[in-house]
Length: 118
Length: 109
Image 1 (cartoon, rainbow over the protein chains, first blue to last red):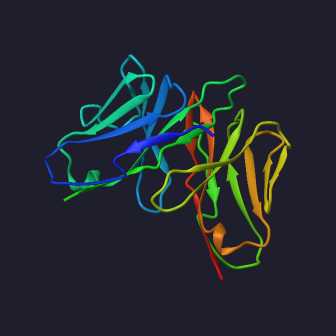
Image 2 (cartoon, chains in turn purple, red; image 1 turned 45 degrees about the vertical axis):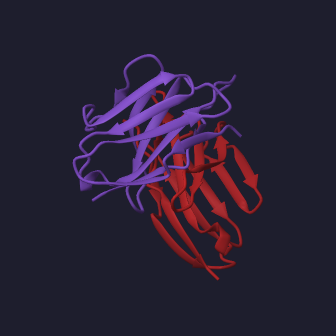
Image 3 (cartoon, chains in turn brown, purple; image 1 turned 90 degrees about the horizontal axis):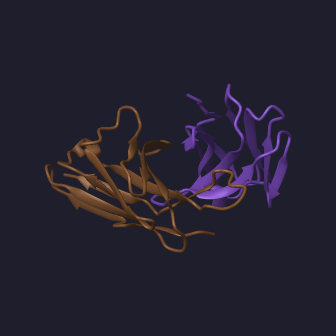
């Protein structure tokens, strides 16, 4: 299967600082990547759709100025949590769709990044 | 907005028991996926069902897509402790993959 890699796997930061999480597609090019957020024992909530070369599309209720997304190349999308606060602590997961014929919407997910804001 | 309702949300059973997880929606999906996620990791795709009435088997796991493509089920036969995890159904809505609430399964030895 396709490989999507996230970095860092976990990060601890102080309140008020900014944290950048990278999502890379290692063996394919992804024009679209998706960022999800997951709280303990809950499902994945879509935050935004990252589009290569254009602005990200944010889901309702997600602050675009708080969660900056950049998709500068076909293999890299970044999520920057700006001025992080303890309530931003969560598990952030990215995913990408492998472009192929007869695509049924299957996504491949990164390993996730655990953010803890002190 | 298409919503996926999963049930049950939590399930704790003994090794060797059978179980079924349901994923229901009022809307039609072109396909549904089932994922399994372990703590601290990203979800891993188990199966995609596309055709109404389709049944797919993956060892002890049986997946079914409803005839009307609005619902799906996951049946596990003779559950083992290694089956413990979070099971998620997901469907594509307006180009985005939307997840159900998830079912946390615990299989006790």
